Amino acid sequence: MAYHRSIQRFPEEFADGFRALWRRIVGEEAYALLVKRCKWYRYHLSRWHLLHRAGRNRDLGKFLSNLNPDVIIYPTVLDGLYPIDLLREGRRLKIPTVYLMNSWDNPSTRAAVVGFPDQLVVWGEQTRRHAIDYMGAKPERVSVLGAAQFEVFRNAPAVPRAQYRRQLGIRADETVIAYGGCSRLVNETAHLALLDQAIEDGTLPRLKILYRPHPWRAFPEQETYFYDIDWKNVIMDPTMEECYRAIRNGRSMPIELANYKNTHIFLHAIDGLISPLSTILLETIMHGKPIMCLFPEEEMNLNKGNSLSSSDLYFPHVAEFFERVDCNICRRYSDLITEVQELLQSIADPSMSEKLQTQSEYFVRPSSDAYHQRLALLIDKLVAGRSRKA
Image 1 (cartoon, rainbow, N blue to C red):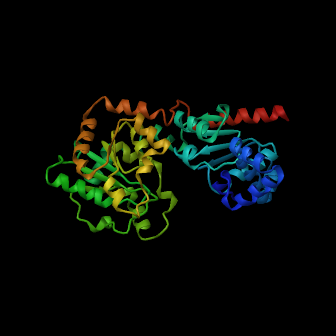
Image 2 (image 1 turned 60 degrees about the vertical axis):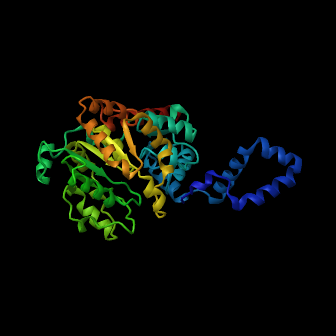
């Protein structure tokens, strides 16, 4: 059984019934005092009531009881089908639970857990603090192990930079700025067209724009199909062509197409990156490449169907990123050329690469040990602790 995130809030449909119940039990004056001084009590009462009505996931409990694992490991966005069920059944059966967060926004914006795992594994200091501040986690139950999906970045890319560029017809000495798309309703081909024209008319120097659409992107109705435009200086990342065509034609994106090995090849080959707002900004600075966020307010204000809004810049994980990282935000189309010129200056700065990589370590902690080794040590400690208690 899945629980919805609204379980963390006092549900309005139960409000009148709860108010009437407590008025009858304690009287009007005592009830008013209870509401004033103990508002948190309504949350706990409503949570208990909903959990009681929802009941246990008995099938899951039976499965875990028969399997009797030493530990439950669950990769999760902290929302979805099973995070609460696994916690409740794991606690009932005295099986330690280890949750592995999936993306950098999970502890601050997507967490919908009732209770807390024995260990929440997070990426870095940012998400450790967010788990404590926003989820109420005890510090000793949060472990910083880095990000499993970024382990591929530790190795040399499968296709060297020079070879990848040759495959795209890009000279070795040519500047390449990537456009990393996002998953929201953003008119990305319109952005690319502005950059293409600026290069053609000489307001930007000769360079190539390498487009990598988000593997789960959404297309606004008015966006022109990428392959219907006669691009002069814009190239699609070839590893994303099949993905782009599939999603544009309304087909499901085969999950195997979203391969971080390809992301690593792509980021290793570019010189800098522009993105509306996506995790690729973080992935790029991990590669020591300068970045710029293109977040034009004109598009946010005019396109009412746009699911990307200015409030997204103030999400805790995003706001802190811009506070700690050298990244300009282009808020107006009229500033685009100036901001790209500043990005080119950062690309030319030999000290910028090391600086950005150092800044990225706050968000994803590096380690000399592989992720699986770090995780194995954590699990060994939990299993040993369970054995001692038994």
